[in-house]
Image (cartoon, rainbow over the protein chains, first blue to last red):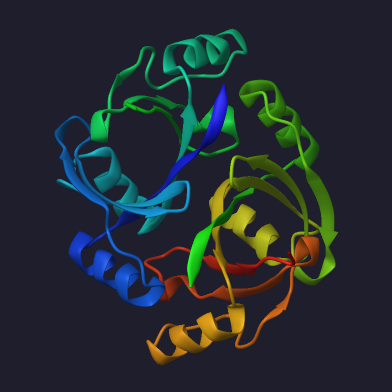
Length: 134
Length: 134
């Protein structure tokens, strides 16, 4: 079941410069920073009310975000949807015929459990299902 | 001051089909539908916790969203940030040297007051400032 928007993921060329730009222009402070080797990214989160803005830098050009930046440039990258159970949500999507990137849940940042859904099934939007560690 | 993410805007080719896809795959129900002539769009909102997923269809090819769809295809389009005062936020961004699309606040859907900020100042993200009517 969908319980909220966990985060909006934004791909950036220069993570430190982007963090500084968001701090300065929106007056918000980063709440978390983490290298996620399994996804080839370094991410910085800004908590805003019940959700977060997530800036993501690529760890190299031959990573999913590196290839996204080369093809489309910086900007909105994916939508993180908070669900109470990633495994059962994946099963429901599979039953509905939605193509998945991750066939089973895996570890995300902040101790979360995640899975990516293929954009072709979600109207061009790369969706990340996020199950909170809390 | 930034108080939340008001909505995540997703450009779609076929609004009715996209609404049906989101209903069926995510189990969420639309909360609002509106034609916004001034922006050349029809939008459908799905409230999720404190924020919304906004599906936007173009009213024609020669509209901002129509041109976006022709160039990039369907997908994440803009980020709606909730602020307590659009006018003072615009002034702060102007002072910070951020390029604006709307130099002054205007009317949005749902009785909101809005203004768009140019993506070049926000790391490639089209940002819509949203001041709630409430």
